[in-house]
Length: 314
Image (cartoon, rainbow, N blue to C red):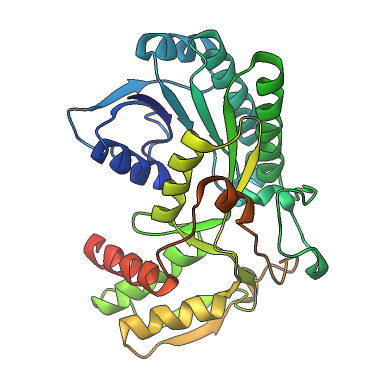
């Protein structure tokens, strides 16, 4: 199968490419060199196509030349904090970029397409609204959430107007090897790995450890992407999550136990987020009903693999 991917050099994208290559598919990866933070997998079935989501003509040329049987759209500006610094760029890349890609796909072949957005579209959630489902009303509270909400709104629109078999995936927090800094788990793991190898003092400054979040291993997440691209109902959205909340403090303590060193943990007022939603988790019932997917990699295994990855990097 010929597969066109955006975001193949990103965290989840790199794991997805590995899976698809192992399954024998031919990969055509749209790569924006200025924002790619990981190298593309080196393999004779992985083809690099330089491009830009904001350049409609180059997107159309790329899709027309590759003639894909399936499209995965993972690329975008992925940091909510950065979206406050660069709201226009975030909206352009995540929303307009998605529209440009869908337009190119409609024009050339209309293959099955998966659009990856985010559970960040839901914003602050009251306890009585948990667990989040696909029916929960989005109320994004930062430009990143708005950009992903707008991208997701295009999915049923392009199915209804053009008959494009397109599906939306809404992942919650996903963790695993190769995740970049700027997210809570790799931020913790990188510091602790530095302590293990003697590159840092055994002291950590942390923010709000009381918040509870829904974490899924990235390898389970990309498996869900593959199932949705094959079996998802066109025009529909699906949550990808573990279905249970985990306290940030528990994540930190599990990582400290794995490192097995004495750590002085100090709360830093500047790292505290006063608007933090105390608890956030979702339901994967719709995804399971449609595809049979369930998370398979438990949290302890994810954290052990993440820590080992950071030790190797250092």
